[in-house]
Image (cartoon, rainbow, N blue to C red; front, side, top):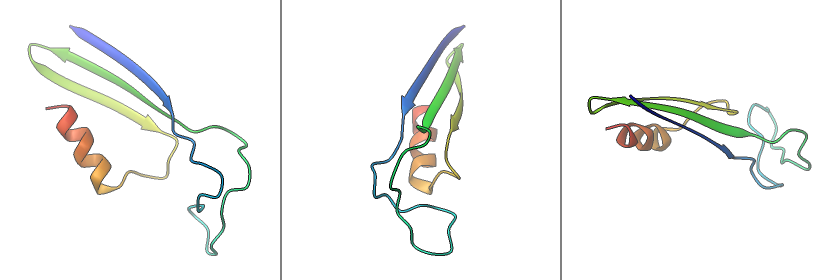
Length: 71
């Protein structure tokens, strides 16, 4: 079995619109950095990935890219 892990900083730049607000607001400072982390396991040509991200959700494009990666 093969295994791999990765972690990357996905903190958006200042001025990025904030999600989850009823009014349009933009970020003005960074309190905590945001990260995406992945664990990929492979055995006998089959691959599975577990991905976590400090986000509210993934858009369809990101989901499609992740699925292609694991094929």
